[in-house]
Length: 598
Image (cartoon, rainbow, N blue to C red; front, side, top):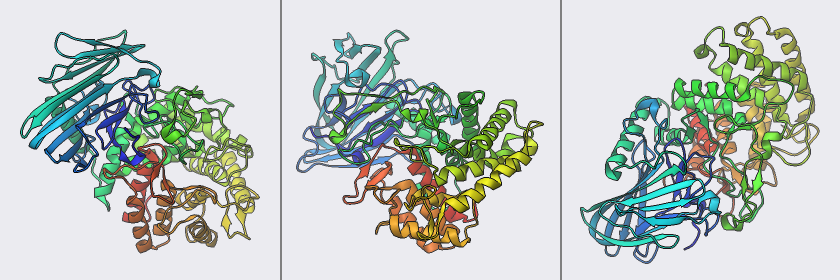
């Protein structure tokens, strides 16, 4: 077996956790308890770290091909395998709770992986390989045959039960291998249920009925969410992916499903993205407002204010755990080889320790965007959060920080960070009447204007002809494309026009991808979608449309984006699916629909 490339994977979700299943029918990633928990399958990051394959014998060989697609508006994946002996469909899903409809999706997910085999033609011999390795590959479980023909796997804090309709399973020493034949019209349902070792036993579901129930749950959820803009065939699937990355119990959005998929094969920039980033807050709300509904936005606000707590002198972390955990201390999993030998593999993310001055701007901008929905005056916790953030920005904006890209070297005065400080105070001033007696719009306005003057003086480089990445630097940074999006300057300002043109010329590539900086080895999908927005705002609608379509074409065969694209091979790089890439697509599509939006 070879380790699949990143773009080979499809995404399953129950809005509690997620799984990745390859074109070869192998589930190579599943953290069943929650998105940021420990894996039971992790072949994604080490060939020895567990998998669950269900596919025709000889899959990938001569005469074999596979076609995949999601059931519309769901994350239920159907893979049709064509072999010399016939064709078979495998439908994969993470089960929804029985009767879950609308916004109940994911609240009581039973943590059951469903796999249903359906014979389509001929007679196909199938192979099932179940190789669990809990706790990110550290544990090899004991396997026990059960009287009903199922197999129980137990190790550490994990219990797994594997069942197959009409197919008695036999436990090997540390794995299960079975082969069986499927004829046209025959259906075999398989389910794998998880439970904590010292809690309730794993759920027992009928796989075929549970798949149908899961399809209905996703369809019912999407019925509440109408998108009236351009490119609905791209926006609706991206919105479904964003929903699939939402941890339903709290409303927090995981930045990605995975950890440590490399930004460059063999490189060291491999980070854990299974947490919720506050920096992405305003962009996320834009996408939810356009392609989802205010319910998701209101739950996200509730999670946010509770996670932050009362604001003091310490900076607000840029990320939190999905239930509001603050300490996400990072460690390396030295026992894992890494995807394509890309080390280290990290769990946790030490960016939570960094000073990130742009965070308050993202949060307050989100509040501003939904101010009418959030009421007048704001509820106490929301009001106190905005007041605390605005006061903190007014007091600390002069400090350096680590910047939007979370550099792990020295702090600098990043232009994008200062601009988001300006955004925080500008929006706070404009909604001061909703913030009660403690609001200080005069002081905030004075600091806001000082920030603007400083950015115009220190961030603009006349020789380069653009706003650069940091004060006094000549180095370009694609984050400058965000300036017109947040209305720091009008889009027809000559400095903005020049910055867009210079970034496109110097950081863009022939196929429209945009790098973050000159030495960035890959195109960053979000930056490419930012350029689409900038072109649309400047009236270059045809160029914007063409760039949007070229960028969107980098999705894999089931519409998933990772974070980056290799400039030489076109391969996907980084964690997958990446929420910001899909959010960037949604916001760019809406900008093409209405250039004056947001």
